[in-house]
Image (cartoon, rainbow over all chains, first blue to last red; front, side, top):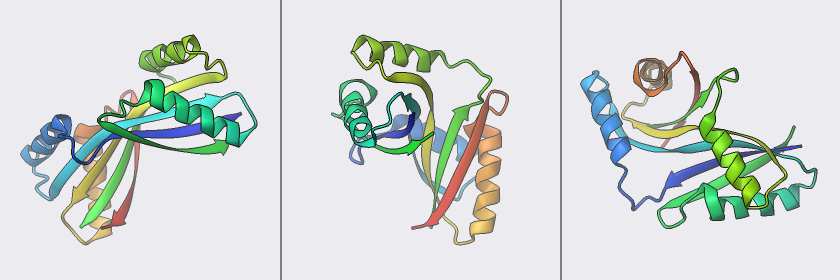
Length: 82
Length: 82
């Protein structure tokens, strides 16, 4: 079994209104040292295979097709045996 | 400046309907090797300080107060200088 830890984040050039809203809330709570915040998704996916190379190909495909919107988002992942 | 990379995930005992929906979609796309998927949040936060100890305390506070719902979610973070 292979565990894939996937990060999907907005591309740097894309506005992040959710992040801006959270930054404002943090400032309102007194955390003035917060300069910038970007919010993305984190997914943990268990894949029933023992071939890391094949798993990497399949997970990249899943990201392209469903898990990330590659027009505005980028993804990265790391695999580990579990 | 310190960059905090924060992961907020549902506790293991909490149902993840979003994850189940994504797992079903992946199966429908032919990715039958996917066994389980859990979806969380990933945040990158820039903190304007140079004291890592103070930053860790403040970021933990932010997680407790705003960024995570500690009834159903757990959080972890790592800090790095930028």
